[in-house]
Length: 386
Image 1 (tube, one colour):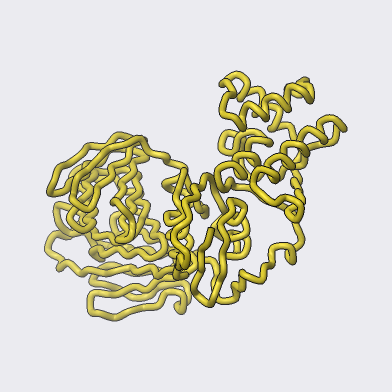
Image 2 (tube, helix red, strand yellow):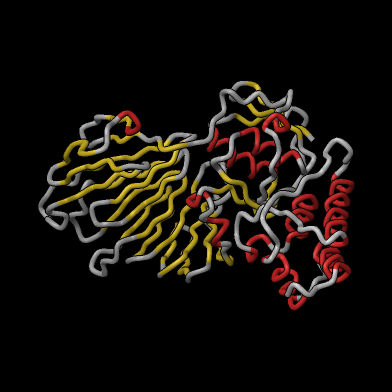
């Protein structure tokens, strides 16, 4: 696969950019990319006055380095099956918005007079736990170990934002139901293992209310915001997630629910097993790889799911799939606990790709600015302009 000539590689790069590359050509290009040494691609932002010019610089750099038989030093953060070929990654990044990438530059080059980011930090392991008696525990202030007990259920805090409920009599039908709530603020994340062994990851600005122990014939929890579930299999006791007027009913499966009030729909995405999504207006039975979208009227529509994009947040990434600036900035706002303002109206740019959520806000905004959108940070506000 290393026998491609510079002319062939240049032609494949052009085809990828234009969207005319065939599957066979794409496979050749990806194989070539997989043998490219790691490093960085640099470009002169000062002399590139438009996305078109920057795109041409990148393409020319690829051609120049092939002609000089010098390695094209892309920093390969994830496998090619996700990023595509070297040229495609960077050219698609410029053409459509953003693509996940890494550029080795001096920290000072990321600084901007318009981006003063001292008050905006990436999210971390933050949450409060409200017990059945109303006691509120700030988990980040607690030491690891036993936090308390609800009836026969022990509550244990582990490392790295993990909470475990350990019930000695989890199936005891006569025990009273004690509801607890785990609340994750904007700028936070947390995960919890429920008494039945179900594991739940909570995204920023989300909460889950659940019994300290599941004592009845059904296991039911209530969700606000976004969570990823790995439900412990128990055919005799269905697991139900209530989200407003909708409920998702399962036996044992892996799925994600996104139910933020400021989003246009409640999205239930199935990775493994089977789930039934029910609302007053209808229901849908999902298969793995499908997503149910319930709008504000309760109508449910089933569409193919982008699994990687759906659970990117759980894996520490922002992921955008032809997303509007509003969609992008809602994710940014929740994670950095920021307020988004559009002083001159909402730009129409679309974005495609991934960014590490552990990046600082300066790096995130500089990546987004490559699309032509400009940002000004004022305290906890981010001003967005064309």
